[in-house]
Amino acid sequence: MKILPLALAVTAFAVMATGCNSTSSRYAASSDDDEYVYVVDWEKVYLVEKATREGNANVDTVWINYPKKRVKKSELASQ
Image (cartoon, rainbow, N blue to C red; front, side):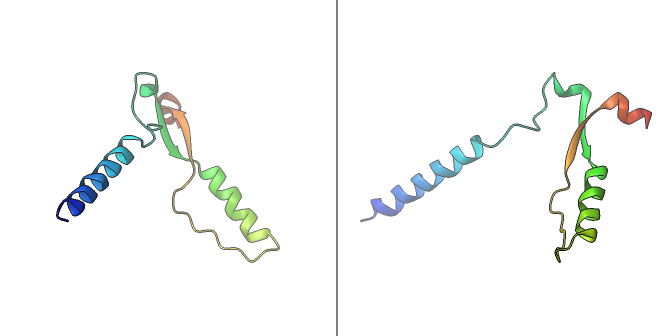
């Protein structure tokens, strides 16, 4: 009977370890992405909030994560 809690603990650890390993690498740095950066897409935020205000439905927009766009670092520096 003492083996069952140990087996459950080992299984739970294995499931959590594989879950962390399978996370998305979308924002991982690579040599291809060195010249790009992700910034908040304020134009999209404005359009969504404008549609919320002007629409017929009574909707509130709450941003958990703002939409992002990929921009070259050289374009960002020139703004």
